[in-house]
Image 1 (cartoon, each protein chain N blue to C red):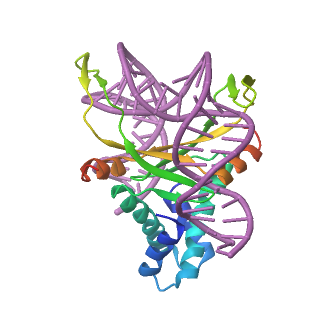
Image 2 (cartoon, chains in turn green, orange, purple, red):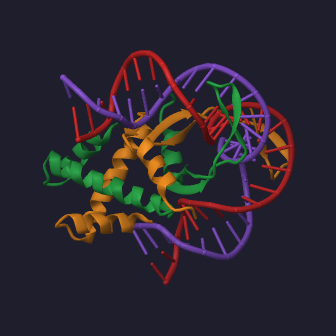
Amino acid sequence: MIKNDIALAIEKKTEYNRARSLSIVEGVLEALKSALTNKEKVEIRGFGSFKVVPKKTGFGRDIRRQKQIRIEKGQRIKFRPGQELKTLLSKAKPS
Amino acid sequence: MIKNDIALAIEKKTEYNRARSLSIVEGVLEALKSALTNKEKVEIRGFGSFKVVPKKTGFGRDIRRQKQIRIEKGQRIKFRPGQELKTLLSKAKPS
DNA sequence: TTTTCGATGATCAAGAATGATATCGCCCTG
DNA sequence: CAGGGCGATATCATTCTTGATCATCGAAAA
């Protein structure tokens, strides 16, 4: 599924055309991005939660130079699926 | 950020009221859930990708009974943040 | 069509997550 | 507001990811 597919689903659900539906989907994504950029946790019951956490510290590896390098401070995003999503998955047919 | 906050953002962006905006947000989430339930990967450029992958195999622990147990087959969902989201995060002020 | 993101893979060591089940305080949401 | 999801926590052994950089190629998206 890609952004356009979601817009298609919104198009079917509303009286908006594809372009407007796409714009709305982008609005949703933008809201999420903005919250996360502000380190704000995002929690959607049933779907899941996104949380900004610190990067690991210590060392990483620069493969090109075969050397260890120090990992700078930073943040990353963790997603944790919600209950409902997990349940839907466990009920779906095995792949 | 919670579902209602996203609906608020959509309300501001459209001529829909809160209830309809909320319904649209739910439509977006429903589309995502449906795709994932069907084991379909979801890729949104810049935001990130969700992918259904097999659960780890081997053993888990039943704490109540202080015993190891075998982990049944299953699926879980992995999220991988997109480039843009990572970049926004690294540019945001340290917390 | 063009741009560029994203998946994959390579290395290595450290550390986080995963799985299982249950409790409890907080809080999302119908 | 009430119901129940969510997250932290507990255990233990194992699995997996994380981080760094970069090349390749398929595909998202403008």
